[in-house]
View 1 (cartoon, rainbow, N blue to C red):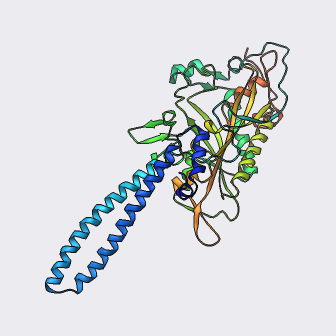
View 2 (view 1 turned 180 degrees about the horizontal axis):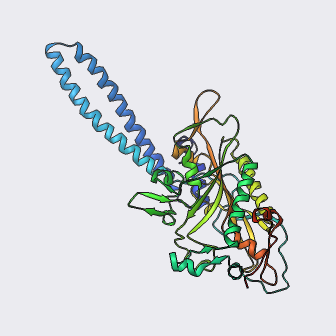
View 3 (view 1 turned 120 degrees about the horizontal axis):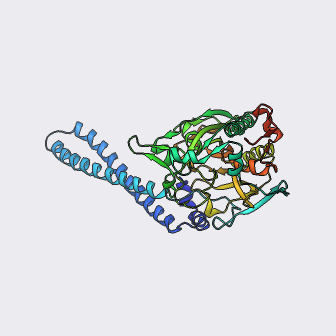
Length: 421
């Protein structure tokens, strides 16, 4: 949720952000109008409520006809107060509902435009030249007896899969390496719930325009998370944090579920775009002043993981129209995919500023004793999709796959994944 005070003081800033995202700037005026009506209704209620309290004291002291007149007046005021409270509550609900439609205000410097208007910040590593016919990750995975999409579809339907043998070990190696990287950076590892309440899912901004991507269990009114970011954001909901010692950092390991609605026909082969996967997600609570620096730190930790996996990649600054509603800025790391000769997103890190914290009631105590909303940030440290890039970039002519040196300790010292004959 955006800061309503900022909206009142600088509506043009919010309008410009809406335009950059491709959203409706007129929503700003609707929110301002609803907020004005909310404050007016609340003022009327509080004024008459004060009169009601005063009348109560006068009635207790009055006698005879004066008391009867005051009782009549008190009854009328009580009825009016009740009606005004109803009006104030309705105005509050309407203003809140409208304000939740406004996405987070994009940071200065975020590229305007849509999905294809990103800016490449840098390229890292050399894309490999192959002197043999390149196989895609599924062909390699099947040759290694590591990926089984046919049985995945038989058991669960399209976009499901089994990771078997070295496939399962490879995923665990990547995720455990990510946890070690997180520990070294001062994160607390957390195994998170994968079912959350509606208010937690809504608080993180995932029940807006992309609600159709989320699995909902109506019988229990719970949602399956698409990232442990959701549970980690809810972890401190309604709390006041002490950030005097620096950011509070968590690394969440969880299964993740996405409906992939609207992606019909996209990346249907293999395990690029699937309904279920595992991920280690970095999540930070920090001060508003430190948020941009923490964002760059998370990006650097993601890049350390990509270096460990020895993957060529690029870093992009995502355009405003391709940001999620909670993100003020997002950097993606995309690894080179030899079989398709394109870059594939492997990591994403978002600075959500105070947007999620306002919705979830997460604050910090300041030096003067007051409280204010914290900033929240998130970023991928490793996920199942990494297997795609790892197999393809490190494949060899005989269908084997070289294991990057940094991952070998997590695979019992294996240097090469050999095809199953």
